[in-house]
Length: 232
Image 1: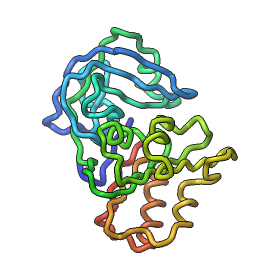
Image 2: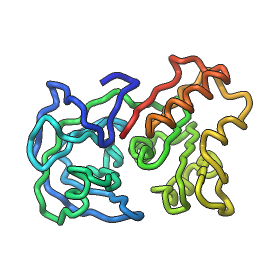
Image 3: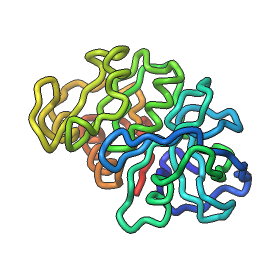
Image 4: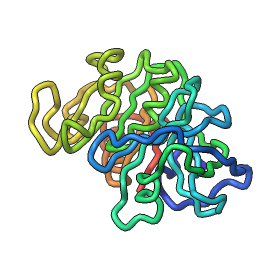
């Protein structure tokens, strides 16, 4: 897993060190249309921003998902949306309390520290930043989240309460007061004098990540300061 890696529902090879652990479903909630927050028994420690493989059996084609809970929270939380024709997400969405799942041990390097930085996400790509937020790493951070509708800004009440005007919601599908009406790429294009000595973390679909990376490079951000995670 590199700093510019892939995860979040992608079929990807698991590292050889990622063994499987049996766990149980504690709770599952549909927090938006076809978007679910799954809570599991926590069997390991992790660093905010890391990922785990999940399946109903311990198998090498487990799907990879960012952890969405804080490092000190009691349960392991996974944010996912149902993929049409998907092999796993429809089954995950139908899980009940007490059902058995298998997760790998956590891995990945998409992690941050207390330094000033920018978190940029689209859709369920907000998950690693939620983990960082709930782990107490939101000070000196700016969070930009892109979504299609006002209900696609997951965890927004918590973000707003703590981060205030450092939390920007970019809504591409509807106009609503308090939101930037347009894509997050449009918001970024309108910003001037971005700090070149800070780290920019990008998480979302490949098209968004590539477009945002190119915008940042044109604004003078060094490539080494742009870290990305791509999901499919």
